[in-house]
Image 1 (cartoon, rainbow, N blue to C red):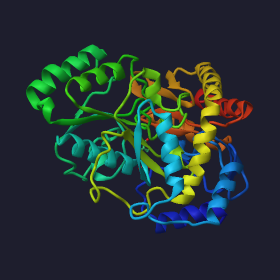
Image 2 (image 1 turned 135 degrees about the vertical axis):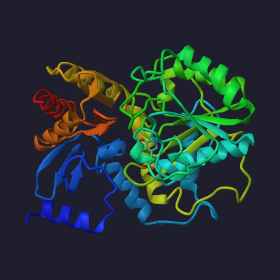
Image 3 (image 1 turned 120 degrees about the vertical axis):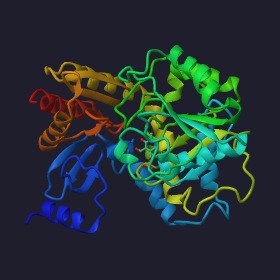
Length: 415
Ligand SMILES: Cc1ncc(COP(=O)(O)O)c(C=O)c1O
């Protein structure tokens, strides 16, 4: 039996099989935007470990920073003690926000969303939180209450968090969505008049661009109008930038595309440069929880923070090329000659190509396109029901990006 099959067989024996794997990639090592499997085959990384390694794999500056920190200490819980590295990264994150901010470090995206919800409830002393259908915010009970991009994510896990509401995201594919004004009217005149008093709503939580749900870019007036509505009622705005943040969409944070200032920003994925690190970054006056009310053991791990310091220094220098390379990838995909390409959309290096067969999502087409791309040496992933999603490292060389995109395009054309 070859190594690939052996690992996959033992994986199915010893690991819970609740994941959705698109193709049988068994990673051995990776460097920059290239990944090598255990049989020595080379692949172009078009997903960056699901949007994590923004600076590519094994970035020399990150390796150096971690090695340096390893000589000092691996762990010393921030919840009981102090270290300067945490202050440095929090200060840097605060400087990147349009408001004076405080930070709570977490270990993952879902923990950042959980934290933001707790902070919003505590600060406002209100209990309701409103989310949007087709979102992905994580898998733990609180964040799962707002995750709704596939019903399998929620099946048999109920009851979830009480006092949560889900409304349509401004997605032109949703038959209940007409335009942003009608959506805001629905919230004011129906939700707030008939379901919940706005004085009991702590926050709205949303992805500025839905990732897992299919790379859904809302109309430009959505965030500004939602911000105005939430402000009017003293409701907080939580933006989940776990996927869109840290340069992914061509701005440091996706909310910057829309000229709004949120109250709480959830981060993870790219923040730790490949090490587990998340954060809730919030307006200083909102982050006013008292001692003992919220904490964790591992949040702000020193090795992860040392990597994060490099990420936060390097990513702002990459934003222009994120936009340039992103445009080239989109153009390449738009040229695909296939009756199944419904739309190519995205911002920066967060790109989706939706496949449809007639009016229906072409699910088998997605599975086939991903497997074919993998066999030909590129690693895109899926999103929504039938969207090929590209989230390459922000550092991907132009030539490699185009080569990988061509592989994806040809896989789609062969459907
Ligand atoms: C927007 C968004 N929020 C939250 C999460 C959950 O992050 P994690 O898997 O680190 O818990 C994800 C993960 O894909 C995400 O895309």
